Amino acid sequence: MRGSGKSRLYREWPGATPSPPHGQMCEWPGCVNAAAHPAPRSRSHLKDYVWYCLDHVRAYNATWNYYAGMSDAEVEADVRADTVWQRPSWRLGTEPAAGVRERLRDSFGILGDDPLVPPARPPSEEERALLILDLRPPVTLAIVKAQYKVLVKKYHPDATGGDKVAEERFKEISEAYRKVVRALEG
Image 1 (cartoon, rainbow, N blue to C red):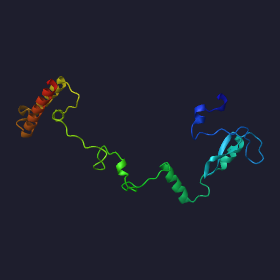
Image 2: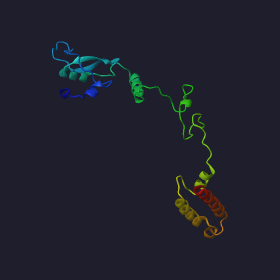
Image 3: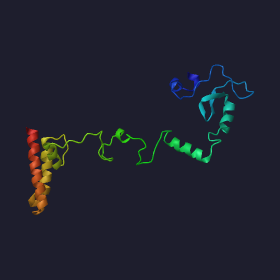
């Protein structure tokens, strides 16, 4: 395999360049050299090869034009089909086939209610309390106490000058703190 220039793995891949048949001669008219280079027979038969020697495959490649004989519209259609790997596509917002939406997962709710994603369960009392304290699990008692001190300093009525909104937030924070501490200790 050392002299071939290609690893064994590469040559065994589907779609890899095929090896020439044993004793294959160049198919260029009048040539008697050994053929080692494949070239497609035509645009419609890309996996059906003719075999040429190095000089003649170079001449073939210099004159090969995949789009020869196609109109501008056909070339444009082929290029557009290649941009989506020859797979069908449609304009955004249109659904050509019934049931397409049912095969999509919409975890962010962009498409509206998604029948494949179960509705989120409401947060538990402890989870709501953590949200009020601006914390995410997992938490420890030390983390909860430190965050509580930060929020109390910010929303305490003495620090806010009697602001009613801040006072209500302070009450929420105090109640949430009690619930979280009770859950962690209990």
